[in-house]
Image (cartoon, rainbow, N blue to C red; front, side):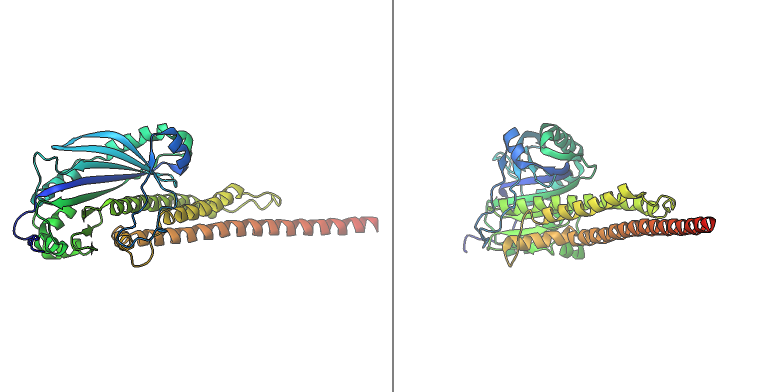
Length: 373
């Protein structure tokens, strides 16, 4: 390891790397990837590599379609391009890629906090939404129940493939912890020791010279073999968007049905079902939410003590996905309770009405018997 130097000696010069910004959107209930492939010059996302102990059975259930959307206007002096990744469960991820070094003016690690702050303030959301609207119009026949959600989820990744002087992962982390924490926090001011430790707490390394630092809104990948890790982070950002979308939809429905459940059905219509539409909608909502959650969860299965599974688990925790899942489960339980309340009230009302009719018929029969007598 004589060619490796301590990262603390100087600010490393980035020989090759890129800045990636993801923006996830929900376009509808489902997207036919087969139709998308026939309509656009897209290609399936590459399968996971067999490196870092990744078994060949750990792959995308339905490989998303990837489409190049052209070049991006310069961000500072950085050249960039735009890609769209289309998922079968109705989501699209718009990705912006900027090269951190074009050979003319190499960047140093010390310059990245300022760049990250500019990136965060650049406000790409409107541009990304315009891109996804244009894409949606092109693939509209492939979308089941198309409707572009107002929700969006963004995430930023700093990919550092190579430095001019190679660095050990442990030296890189220990020698430049303050700069790395600033990058992840989009801040140029010195951070406290407590904040630095918290920001860099999710550090994952496999070989001596690779490192992934995961925070709630950004990650740093120090690795020349970064594609799989980047794809997993993109998928997780989409999963977070879908979790927020489901939670929002359930919130809206619960408010409507809670008001409805407080109303009493008309007792005098024994053969009617006053809550028929609401009961059907509640049943369909439960099924659709469960199916969507299952399809998102099954889009990529990473289990066991594997590198990508560790990345997925750490990022899920930073994204608070378990908390979102718990919230969705509670709201699905509320939906189930509302469904039961409405069906019970209808059954009770109809039972009471039928009992009243039977009583009336008995009285009539008694009255007719008296007349005949």
